[in-house]
Amino acid sequence: MIAAVDQPFAALAQALRDLDQDVDDAVRIDRIQALETLTSVVAAAQARETTAFVDSQRAAQRAAGVKAERVGRGIAGQVALARRISPHQASRYVGWAKILTTELPATNAALWAGATSQWRALIVARESVFLSRDHRAQLDAALAPSLAQLGDRQVEREAKKIGYRLDPEGFVSRLRHAENERHVSLRPAPDSMTRLSALLPLTQGVAALAALTRAADSARAAGDPRGKGQVMADTLVERVTGQSTARDVPLTVNLVMTDQSLLGFTDNQDEPATIVADGVAAEVVPAELARRAVADASGETTMLLRRLYASPATGELIAMDRASRFFSPAQREFLMLRDQTCRTPYCGAAIRHADHVHPTDAGGPTSITNGAGRCEACNHAKQAVGWAERLAPDGTLTTTTPTGHRYRSPTPRARTDIVTSPLEITIRHWLHAA
Image 1 (cartoon, helix red, strand yellow):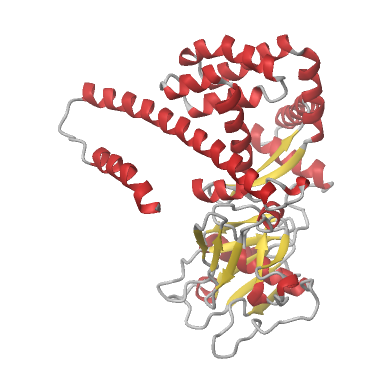
Image 2 (cartoon, one colour):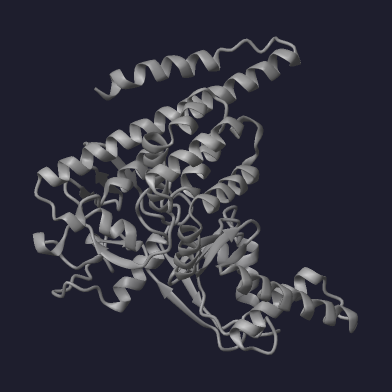
């Protein structure tokens, strides 16, 4: 069945690969425009299929006797796996696609016609979430004719304006709800940096930025050689942590690297290391930077040798079975260091739960061989009707969804072709000012 579904798409993909490249630039521009139109049509078709799938799955769950409060669990997770995106992205997409395909006919038609992009159509859906069905229809009729001429930010501004005019009270209520969703998050950035982001009410965000700007201007006026952005970043860290300088921040860091990378010998000395911290997604760092971090660590550094990936001959650590249904702190830390991020393919979120692959209520043991690091959303999704998982002896996790599709997630590990002895080194240290 799957092969039959793939045939027309495979033919289209082959036709695009075979496009004659011996053409002039005017033809190339025409093709770029045509491909953009095709991208919009594909997005419209994908939204339609997604909505139909969600409706069918919800109906199947209700027919199976799933409790009302649990109907819908695991559906967005299936869409996430199919689209190769995170469950969080899929959850938002599923909701917006439903609104787009069922309550925004003019915007949906513009997408089918290639007059707008998928993201702009989803912006309209997102900004109309708080409106009633009638008001949503009015927004759709008013905004859709202009979509072909508007950019992303213009679409967002116009949708907000129209939405506010239609339902001022609902708009304000939405803002109040948004304030309840304020939070702080951390994402990896290039060159071993991170992005610390805060979702704040408008006035608080502006006030925070103004305070940091004033601090930077004052420091620069007093002769501080750092750039304005550097002073603002350092001031943020100092004020949040209460330290006198940004570098003087106590922080426990798990630095996982191969012995050859640590010691800097053989041709494999440049194998990257990984920083793993509880509650934060793993980040890859160059071997040289990892060695420098070890060399620069203070005298309080403690080095622990730990067999994170046990030798098949001895089975060390793998034999950490427990009678309790709860993982011990040591087992939880092991899963965090081994898996680094949520084991669900394409998720990438920080590990929040130590999860039993084979559930304890079905006889699954509380052991490393039956454990996986999960984010909260994925742990709940896999408990829905029709989901199944299997952990192979080599650590590969296979997830089977209710539709019978299978997705594999190999265990992150040191490359066995580099490290003769599967030994990794965990270095914990306190970071202090030099």
